[in-house]
Image 1 (cartoon, rainbow, N blue to C red):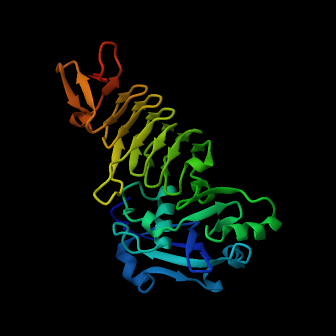
Image 2 (cartoon, rainbow, N blue to C red):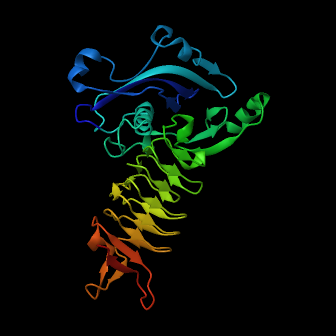
Image 3 (cartoon, helix red, strand yellow):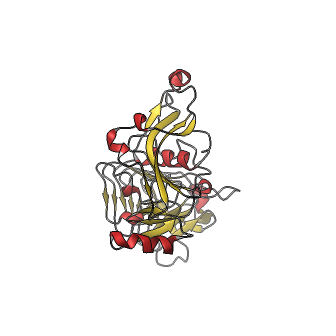
Length: 316
């Protein structure tokens, strides 16, 4: 994100339950805002406000309605965030930030997502729209008149492709990519891959394993089948940043937890590493932990005959 843009705004459609719970908000065209013009362009609109019919396009006006079967009101809103480096204030704010990420307007960790999940409600995501879990069996009966009901999941975050389909990407299984994922052009997320919010790829890459929230991988990297990359947590159990450099490969069922890697690193099959995992360095003839090579380039860590621990060799 350019340093000249620290705010954002978007006009969207929110699904609000009868008890006032914000189920989701869709922002089809979010924008970054230049702070130099902030005070004169948006003097009174910080936060989220409901919009009238005169404030939205005819196309969006058709989406404003009361869905009596789902017990949900669809309303038009404008959300204005003055500072993306500050924590989100409500669910609308969080959804705008998630859209900014998936629209590739900002990269992971260029905005504050620390309290995002805490501000979102648990939602039943269906092909008829989001619903509250508490009364869903009654809602299911009401919705049957519209045909078969498909429940995709019960979670705080929806599928990305129901809100944003970035250009130049391939996603084999829609449920495996959450809204708020950042997928660079040329990225392929295969059927067993998973990308959480505020994580993703900075260049063309192949993901067939799991990227937790906070993980960023570089161009040309390949995350193998059933592999896992998990970022560390802070004292409040919130995910921190973890970087995997360019042209790295992770073998089948491999993984790394809480340790960043530089460029050109390779992790062999069935090797899972965390900060305290001992690995053998034949160049130094000693055991060290993975933490000792954090962020360094061109390391290959594999199993070798005669060694109980994984073996690390520098590839020049």
